[in-house]
Image (spheres, rainbow, N blue to C red):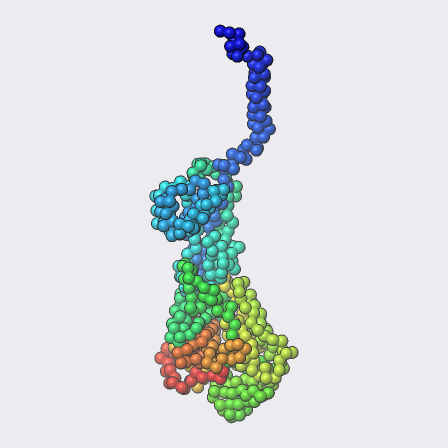
Length: 574
């Protein structure tokens, strides 16, 4: 072999030394890096490891139950499962995704959109699925697809209590009604814990509990579920019978101010809100405002009696049921030349009420209306409660003072009106209204003298007797007192000629009042529109059933009542 060939295979000594030095230096760098990371940056490495396998998961709190006054459940939370996924680990084949989309009831496009962002490590595919769907998804055994337990609200009474209770959203937080008003107490506080998960998202170890979940507190309402069911059924039937747009009803306990029933029709099923619209959510008892019409006349009469200007027997000239003021004529349905104050209520005379009001100071009327709660939001803590409209007396013209005497030019809610009638049932005391069970006598406010309140109570009892406008409100075994109301509805700034709102407010037993019931029927369209024929029968049905359920002693003979013939009653001036 030549010398040149031997030179090609012999390496210079310095090269081997350079390679050795480089290798030693590389190992030294690696060793130094290892010492730095494991001794100096332990926290950093731990954080990176935790980011891949350690998770802090929320532990949902059980929402408190809503109960009626007897402890029967009106709203409960039941455990359900939600389906979620880690997009990076989710099934990639079209066949698997098609099966999953079909089970969940979503489109393949929607499923692929949710799984498209592989940078996320959590995405809901479907929340609160049925147990059957959850089991079917589990049997697919798809990688990256998991389940966890949440809670879903269930309302045993369905549409009967829908507007009162409201409902919760997908996160079990209150969105309407009592659920929203008492969210702080019902919702509780969720907890959290740290866990270790494997690459498939399965929990392999509970590391620590960070915060224990605090269950929500149960809430006991003043509602009596039996009276509530009775009220809803009667109202729903009346709305259908009279082909009305809607109806509302409330039952109050005179002694405690508790709301025993609150019903609206039409209603909705809070357990299935797929087709729910905004109009269906309105709790008309509390949020809807209307002109009360003749149901306001007792307050005008009470003020006139309390002022000392009149007594129930005082005669008021009502010349043939007509009174003209400022190019506006007030008319009566039952025209008489003269009426006593008691007859003004019994016959529901607009002219008589207007004359009584014009003899009173404007500020006195305004002050009474204000003190019985008109123009102020009821202190129920209920979302959306309306204040109504009560203009200051300084803006009243004489014609407005006259029409306000019989419920025009003022707007109230049915809850406000029912509460105001406790003044006549409690000898001049106004009781605060509550939705939560108290069972104790309410601390009432004195608004009228006992003498004036009792005088009006007697007149209201006469108003439901034959010859009055509300004999269909009478019930067998108990004396009833109350007042009918019929008002034209306002539309585009004027009164609609063929749209009415029929109402009745009353209490029983008249000798020792226990309950106030207020009924409103919106736009009856089956031929009848007077409060005496449309709303009074609903009052009678609910009042009679409620008094029986409460075991209230009778104060009248248990004899069948003769109903008036057609055209003999029920018409009050509008």
